[in-house]
Length: 518
Image (cartoon, rainbow, N blue to C red; front, side, top):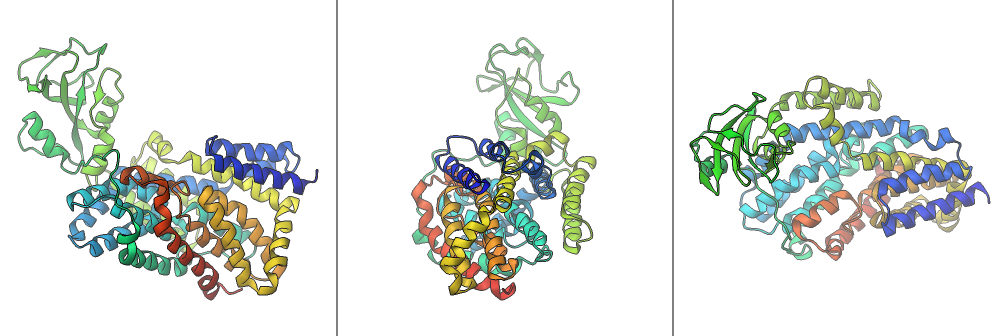
């Protein structure tokens, strides 16, 4: 078989594996370069080149930035501002939520912004006596539009910028893509405000997310320790239960006892729901309230002899806006944005430098930085880059582009964009929008060369089309995240998503060429 045939077979098998969803996404992405190497389409260096690509390293660094903003309470602070200014008006509340989500997405990606703000949005809905389903789907779709406001808004835009520069289309500035992103954000918000009440179903979630906003007051009242502020920037409190076979069974404890580590203080002890003020030996089922630094509470939560009733990290992120390290995280973020905007240094260097600064300045530990990276996304991008390279090297992309051009070429470049929209729109609802973009990009580039037009409008239109993954919950992690929190069903997304997808299509086909001419 020819290299072209092998590449197309691997492409087809990859799409099928993504659709049937029997294997983890990361496993499929790793099988792709191995298959291309085994088939002789790429040598080993070419097949594995994506794992050392600067773009992949930049994407990983952006996840670390996202983790820092969440861990230091910056996103919680943003959520508290939404609560303060949202009011009772549905129009005002929905507009503010969607705008905040879109703006936050520019810094930490759609998945990061939705992961950080979903608990906040649920709390806003509950306090406003609304169903979270009224707000969460529009918020997720606002994140998709917000990914097009800045280059850092999504791994897709980062990858598109790299391909554009390699194709000789010039460097895409940090804010350049906002020319198409701003109209899309406004259109998404406007459409959701006008028609969302009729197109977004009201559902009841199977499980409710916890609201930790008043957790400090709740603990104070429950354990009878007065009105003191238990949760603040420097330190906090968390309750722990003694499980069966705990090595702490029989330990003598009392209020004011300093733990063996010297880091935590026993603030209160309960047995069978009753406060105990005398010294007692711990028994199964006893609960103790420990106070100390957040780091020490996190370590206590890993103690096999104790069960944390609530994860201290989750409590801190909601209950302590602008916590320890927030100012440093914001300063590093601001420096990163300035360097990316000016183009003084390569994007990967800026991103890695920002991630290192967060660790060196102790905003995050190395373990927290690792934990914050979505390794599935990193592996997906790196692995699928090999397929893009194979499609170009084998001539598969050129062959598919020939077919597309022969079918639509006589109708002009706008018809080509329409064809790319249909391909991206269909694939993007079934497999991840990142994988879709990496499949469609080489086809679009080859078609642009054949028609003799600039690659810029083609690639940027593909980024717009890929952002329109709105019809199913499996299209993006952001869509999936709100599904459980809102109680959505699989078929709920297309009602609001389809009109918006058509708006994305129109923007990519007709508006993108206005800013990036053919």
